[in-house]
Length: 243
View 1 (cartoon, helix red, strand yellow):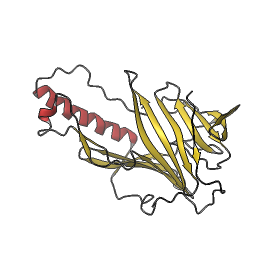
View 2: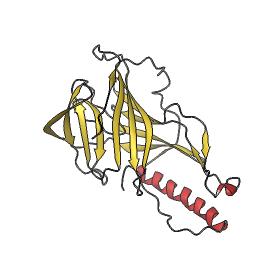
View 3: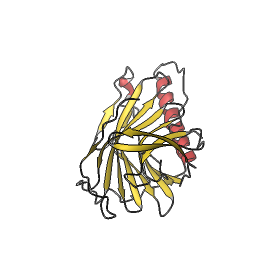
View 4: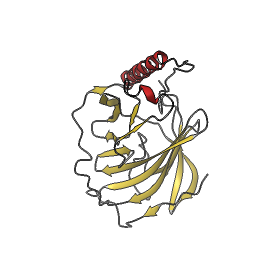
């Protein structure tokens, strides 16, 4: 495993009124073994937290492959707007922001009990002593997480939570997804006034959102077919969770 260096900016104890900020690198290995890395930030305050994917990335990046000429007739644009995953501990729900093409809504999911099994295995990650934990199978994946009780916040990247300390590293049993903490601020100076605000957006279940993804790909494939492209693979990956 690669050496992980974590910079601790403030050494004072984490107080309830402070906002913890943890910068992660989120990695996804697709079928061709190419790694897709994205920056993410976890903010934790009181009984809620927000996981921000693609922080500070704005605008739209257009697909530059040879199908460029149909961009005007169909959206091939990948929106790189930052998206937020709200982890509302009191309400026991997740609200995961979905933003693609003309769709913008929250994927509402019930709180996950990962049923962690804490092992006796420990190791150092940066300056922190971490303990290994293994989850039960959840939607097709088993998670390995390394957490530290030196930061007594039972949170982590993505929807991962429920351990007696902050998760600094996690990966699924297939090796397809991983999260690595890169930087920690115990009392961030970031402006978080609007960060924890839940927007007024439609809400869909994970299964309903997957159907939306299928519809987006269906329309995209129709345009490719009209342009004379041969479609070999029209499947849609459900992503980090398998239904």
